[in-house]
Image 1: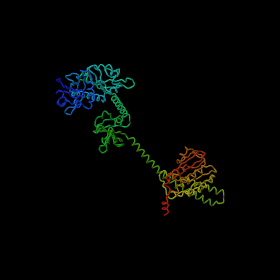
Image 2 (image 1 turned 120 degrees about the vertical axis):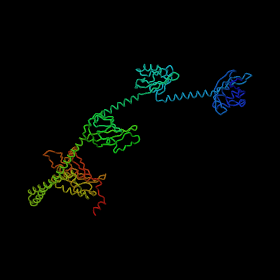
Image 3 (image 1 turned 45 degrees about the vertical axis):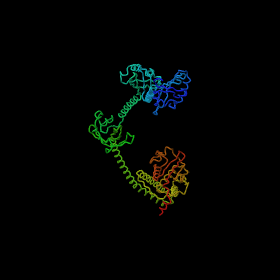
Image 4 (image 1 turned 90 degrees about the vertical axis):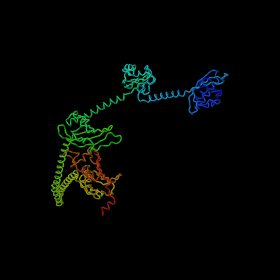
Length: 615
């Protein structure tokens, strides 16, 4: 046997002879291996292949050989990669077996595995890198391009090999980039910028920065960073800053920005006009005049703490202060302050409004209000005086007319004249009462005297009181609906006055021989409803608001057909609303009018309330 690591196997794989060098490769003494199958030392995953190759080699022509690499277990328990060359010497009478030449290649394979792992890591890192990567050989031909570069250029990695990547460079930059690529990478270590052009012509150009790094083998690795988004963001930021400056210089309010040290960082044109000083004289200097610095920060100097993730918060809204112009004049201002914090630095922005004119207008408005209140008090005094002055002669007229009516009994024409005098006096007294009541309502002096109210009895009494007025116009007044309404809590006199005004209006605007209906009942929602319906002249929907306005009348001509001062409906509305109710009018020209009063369920008296009133 030779001096190398050699063993002779039989056709069935038993070790016939093995020299010491081969035995040492496996870590066993030669005698421990002789006569035993060699495959007992082969890795289980390689065993079948080793046996098959042994059979193939035994059947091959004499003198032929083959090579393979298998894992063998070493005596220390580890596995060794062995390169085995088998030669068929079965027919040689001196050998009579398969000659194996063994060489331990574990170190070479381990190195190869590390090299492949290193290459794999390099590929993985290159593919995972957020930047484009090109690898070129010493001749400048690209041998590798990662997928990020393919995404930047829109060209597949295989098409960028060699000089193909230059085809994606913008035509205007291509000659310059090709010349720089051909130059030695160490000559100019500064990155170069150029554009990649969409090969389809549909997408935007991608501006990139390219940095070349020389390799020991003469090749180059180039990193290509897409800065399009950065440039877009930078341009957008410049545009935003320009827009913000334009807005700040356009707004009417003065805007000041200071940091925690009181250094003035912002001073817009409105602030220049308000304080009478250019921004250049103040910016980047301590704000030691114009307005006390304390007004531009948190009240009491207690630092406002932001919630997690919060960077902006309102410090104060409509804070009042006194500011000073450059000429020393002082003036009142209102300001709102917000705090903004970025990377631990806090900035305060204040919006100031000069309220000198507003304070003057408020003072004038207050003076006008006081004058109006004085005039209102004078009006009330006048009305109270007129109440006395008008009622005294009217009471005399009405009293003497009643006396004369008794004295002229039996004298038909004269008695009618006296009755007309008394009726006219009563109508004038009713008008005066309405005017005084409306004045009390508008002045907030109307108070309700609440007591149990029997609406059914109240309605019957009203119809009886209206009989004379209705008879004069040939109008019939009817009561319909639920005659057994629950007792209500309210002011009997005011409810009688409101409902009487509605009936009087209905009679006044009815046609001769017409019918006015007073309907009473409890609605499905629990409210009590009283509706006065006539079939008279009616009015347009647009006129309803006018009809409910004090002293406003739909017919404004001097020779109008219907008398009145326009207080019946407005006063009825105010009296119903004082009870928490509503008054609604539904009318159409020639179709009459329906006035519906609704009183809330809270006005319905309970048995306990009735019993309490009876005690």
